[in-house]
Length: 246
Length: 244
Image 1 (tube, rainbow over the protein chains, first blue to last red):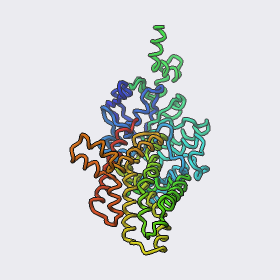
Image 2 (cartoon, rainbow over the protein chains, first blue to last red):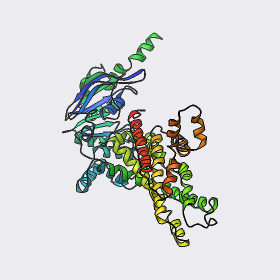
Image 3 (tube, rainbow over the protein chains, first blue to last red):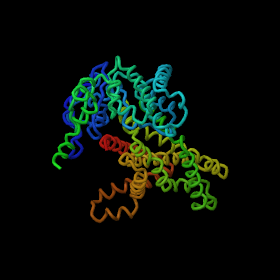
Image 4 (cartoon, one colour):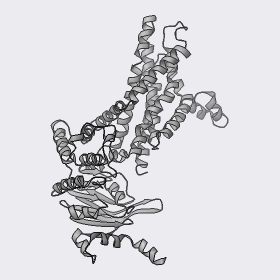
């Protein structure tokens, strides 16, 4: 369960996220959509305790991310934008580090690692330094790190970015497989992805929610019945206005 | 401890994942030897002690320790792993302390590997091994103080070169703050108490006190509180500059 209330973040004169409220329940896979710079990553950074919000609150499984940070972060798996990992480590060493830091040791750590490695299909590259891996494998290392402790809440920032169609398919299967009892937010640019795995789509633009419905309901709003037409209609107001003025 | 250990272990191992550890230790040992034997005329002195050897430590640390510390945080910031590290369920103090202790342990390892010179001096004569032990402790503490400065500066930037240069400058000021170069700048306008306060920050003075063979509680407190202060500043900077 993720409860976001009136979340606001300013960077100097720019307001990146404006009074955003959102509740995501277990079993939901929420697709977080929006043009670049709409505030998707900023919202996720606040929800995971990396950035402190200027206003508003985030609760992860009932734990406030600001006042009860560690408890919230324990129930949370997070894939940050760009899937950062320590390049000199191997996936095995890296996941081992994540397991230890999440207080998983011995048999528990082994089970968790085996499950995450199988889920992210990392078996072939376990002992190669991460910096030598392809973009797709690096993304999957980040994903394995996020799901390692079988968290109740998953926040994934562009989990399929840089993957080839087969890998995208595999990652979507993985997410769909975990969806039943978890609360999942994924951000993406790919509207087909939302239609493939999300039970709910939220479109944000300039830090505000402009649409919140199931992918099918959203798609039905456009005469063409296509989600990308709705997306463009909702998020290109500025360019439309600018175009009209010119 | 349960939070400290994984951070410490990962950081310590990372020195050995690249040629960094090897290069650093080789240069450290080579420079120690070159300074002691050529510049310090170790043999010509005809005295069986290591005061010449330890006398060069502050000046070697001045450049080598910032090189060790510069990547601690700057690298995390540049590669984006900062976001990963700070969203894992670990209290920030444990991350800061774990990283620092890993670098300090590495510096300690390099220092321990200078043991052949201790064997040499014992072979040549009968040195006061108590003084040598105290000097090693003092040198290790001083390395920790330099490292805490380097770690703190590293946390403020994503550029390792900038981290290195600023650390060297800050370390240099702390090293020589007892000398007339610094004191003359302060003496003109500041009250005597402040002048004395500035001079009391000198690493050279505290280190010299320890290498004379007396581990005075005041010198220990000086180095430990300096480390504590800079690590605290390190924590504040990381927390404050998370998003940037």
